[in-house]
Every structure is written in C-alpha cells, then in structure tokens.
Length: 532
Image (cartoon, rainbow, N blue to C red; front, side, top):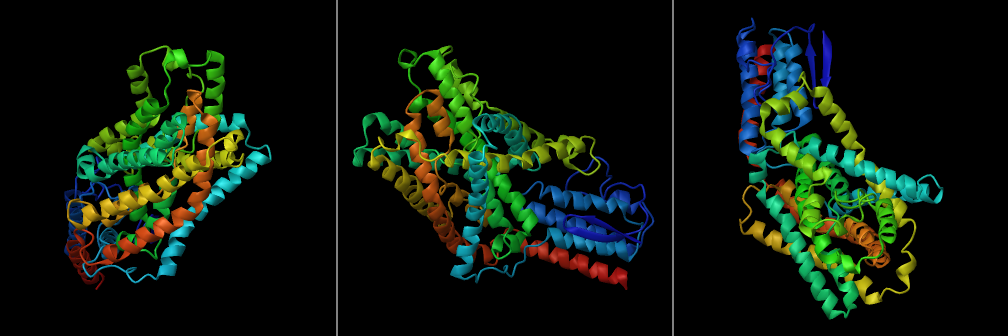
C-alpha cells in the first residue's frame, strides 16, 4: 500500500493500474465517465461512494456556476485512476475528494467574528508584501544590479511573455464565454471605475486650478488604476488568508484560484479601456510632435519605467514614432491588441472548448506539458513587475518635483486614493445590497472593491514618455501616489473586509452550500460502510 499525493488530496492506493479516469466534471478524454469504474469488479459500497463523490462534485459545480473549480482540484480528481478496483481505500478516497470540493456549508463558515485588529493585520500583510518586493527592486537599482537596460529587458519580457502566460493560465482553466457572460458584473465594474475616476479627476482639476497643460495628465492619473500587478498580490493574499471567511468557505487553494480568475478578467477588460484613454488624453498631433530622435529617446525611457502598471506597459521601445506614420484609429486598435489582450481572448476561447482545455490542463492530457510551461512562465510575471516598479520608485520623484504645482499632487493623491474608492465602493455596495448584482459572490465583490483602491497605472507614465508629453510631471504624480498608497491601501482594505466579513460568513452566502454539504455527508456514510 502506498500514498498518492496531490494538492488537496492524500489517498491510499495499491499498485497503479491502467484504468479510465473517474472524473465526470471535467469531461476528461481518458474517461468513460463513472461507467468505466462500474465495469471493473468492485464492491457495491465502493461504487456507491464514487457515485456520491461524483454527485457532490457536480452539485458544487452546478450550484456555484463554476465550470472548472481549479487546476488543483481537477488534478486531484484525476489521481483516482490509480486506485484499486474496490474496497475501503477507494471509498475513502472518494469521500476525501467530495469533502474537499464540497467545503461550503449551510451553517456558515468561520471568520465572521474576526476582530478589527485581525482585519487590519490581514489588510496590511499583502501591502507589506508589495512593499518588500519594491524595496528589493529599489535596492537592486541602487546597487547597479537592475540598470535601466535591465529594467527595459524585464519590461519587454513581461509584456510579451510573462503577462500573457499569467492571464492565459488563469482564464483558460474555467473562464469561457458562458463564464464571461455570468461574470458581467466584474467586467462592467472596470468600466464603471474608469468613468467615475475620470469624472472625479476632471472635477478636481477644475476646482484646484491645475494648469491647463497638466489637466489631461491629472484626469488620466485619477481614472486609470493599477490593475496589472497590485490586485494579483492583494487579492490572492486576502483570499488565501485562513483568518478570513473566503478561505474558510472555499478552502485556500480554491479561493485563491477564483480570486486570480476574477482579477485576470478585470485586467483583460481594463486593457481594452486604458490604452484608448491614454491616446485620447496624451496623444499630440504630428505637427506638435518633437523630432523623431527625441521621441525615440522618450520611448527608451518609457520602456525602462514600464512594467509596473497595466498590461499595456513596457513594449513601446522600438515603435515610438508609429503615431506619426499611420492613422490614429489604427494605432489605437493595434495598441489594444497587445500580447496580454490576445492571450486573454485565446484563453476565453480555449476555456469554451472542453476538449482543448482538458488537453492542456487535465492530468494525462496530450498538451499538459504546454499548460505547465505556460503556468510556470506566468508565475514569473508579478515578481518581475514589482521589482521594476521598485527600481523606478527608488529613483525618487524626478527632476520635475520642483516645478509641479502642489495642487496637482494633492489632487492626484486625494482623488485616486480616497475619493475614487469611497464613491465607487459606496455605489457598488449599494447596488449589491439592493440585489442589483445577480451572481455576485463575496469573493468577486472583494476583488471589485479592491480594484478601486489602487494607485495610477505606470502605463500612464509610459505613454506620456512615448508622446514626450510632460512625462517628468507624471512621474512626480505617480511617485507620491505610490508612497501614499502604503497608508491608504491598508485602511481601504480594512474597511472592505469589515463590510464583507459578516456577509461572507453568513449562512447561504455561498451558493449551493447546502447541497454540497448533503452530498459530502452521503459520501462519508458510504465510506464508513465500505470501511466496515
């Protein structure tokens, strides 16, 4: 007898045997569904246990609407193909799988009674993680380990390889066309965030008397948030924290997987919005452009400072003069179709075709090696982005700090980090409380609220550099915003957690919890009978 280990599942099994996979939820091409197991000699109780495990797995999927719970859960399910033909180990393995996938319970989950100090600590931890990453990048820059050329190379690799792989691996496992339609609230939240931010930025620029030449930059800085790297770290850490009800309800692995999926979908939508906005606010007609050599130098500076914001950053170092060579609409369209955007579109299509999805991510799939390589490359994305961001911030506010009006800095910090989270958060919470956000679970609500709290995307500075349009002044705005966010982010996230924790811990907050618990109980009973 030996142990089989897989994320979230440890079972006892005999020698490996060739058999079809016992996975029904994911339509594995190797399986003849549960019928393949029934054709093999096994006890009646073992067959009942597998049937109950399949029922539990299917119940969770149907009730929650998730077409694919997680890569780890799917691979754990596929390890059952190595189990013996019958007996107690089979039933116990099925019970373990069903219990793992049926974590939510009708009686609510722990975490609802978390104290304010616990919530503050939980909110501060992901921000501290961000700060440590950036501190390493700043140290490496000061030591000469991460030079301007090095930042440019990392930014280019991030744009063309790491970010597309990250988005593909998070979306292709379960966010197909049907899931995008189901999660329309997450997509529209991005549109809503940008519209509110732009309107508040315009009002702040007018009220505080910001010079006209800097008003477009201020408005853009208030409307375009960092949805490329910071939310991945923030939401993943919050979802995996066992002191909070998200991990208590779904398990740390599944909660993290779903949080990253929501962030990836938001990132995809934001990419389609932010690049056109950058052109609208920062593009200067050809007759106003500087000579090509100056523009090329600006583009070099852009690529070295890119990579800390949205997926549009870091890849314009060789094509800075394109806006002068082709129509504006064509330039905007080509800018929207960046590698991350194309990868996201491809991922949605792959997730919509179960055969292709399982070939990449199901255990034993014909393309599983490709899926694992893509997942590994995507894991490099966030550390690389944060190192570059830290290196850029470590250089200080820049040469324009003395000539930028203080009103512009105050407007950028207060509007983006205080006004936008308050207004967007209040409206979003009100819509959810009024029942206007169907299909919105507590974890998706957490991700949507966190999206409003981040500072400006570094992509704004990159595009200002490409167009040679007050890039030094934009660098000052971003520098003070990111410093201030070390204080505002923990406060804003604590407020979000204070509101969401009782909701997420309440009975019935997670759809299908009662059915999942009943199915898990049936499997446990069958396992006990088989063991006896």
